Image 1 (cartoon, one colour):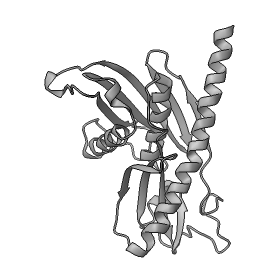
Image 2 (cartoon, rainbow, N blue to C red):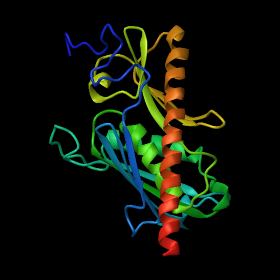
Image 3 (cartoon, rainbow, N blue to C red):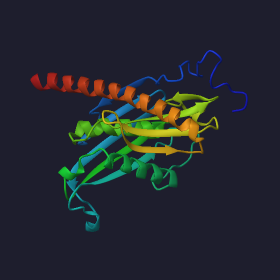
Length: 245
């Protein structure tokens, strides 16, 4: 990474974006007829697929059953062709287990689990192409899949990353920016209430910089919420047209 200029003197990043500008987002809902809910999302060159099953009876050990709310089960994986490294990526590796836990914590803060006692909701997400912001793409895809499944939530859950380059906060980092050696912050937000579902940093950061980084991530999440909302509305229009036909 030595000598690579992540931010030009004119304020442009490697891919031509401004500091606070999001990558292009494209998404579709209802991509799998067999699942209760599904969605596919592209954030820049990062591509993720999410499917949702449930609510259904708790499978496996009865000890997992919660009598006052639903159990949320999340599984994260990466396709072997998703990165330039052709490694075998089993479901149970440490990184996948950690990401699965983060997704579970995120959606426990958003899904109205008390409406489905003694039930289970399964969320499966897979990264098909990785170019930074994997957690964010998974959260945004899973949010659309949950909406497609008709599972009530307090709000959209929108996630985005932010980082610092030369004291300038950057939103929605690509892989090169994440690998630049600076601090990367991942934020999952419920935009209307501004409640934080999850926040994670991978390195130390001086307290003076935290507010600016959080502000950049929150503004990016609010921008993403508008994109997700337009995707949901477009999908509902398409479904209503097909229903009338």
